[in-house]
Length: 153
Image (cartoon, rainbow, N blue to C red):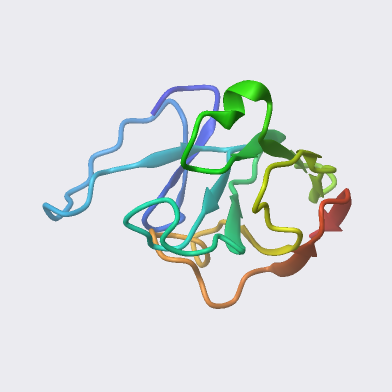
């Protein structure tokens, strides 16, 4: 693992110290995947194409250890209107010392945009947040309506 950072095994949530060699046996359907501490990753519903289901519930996984930032980008999914500025963004910022996630004001809009949605927030650990499926018991369930929120863990 690259030195200078901690890393998380995506499948198990196990935290690994950077600068060490990792050897892991995996089945054919699992690729070893390691997430850098400070990452914020959204997990959406299982879909085969963009408009199959509404993405009104997203799991937001925080990989603690250092501060992190992520911008959620959304648009109409089926045209080039984003080239004209018709899209939205939401910034997520993790303050590791304060154990605080700030979800910023939504910027922009587009036709059909969700006015409200649920974010299920998970702070990943060896006992929570590993694997590709959304978990049943997030650390916090947040209803987001486009206005800034600060969530303490």
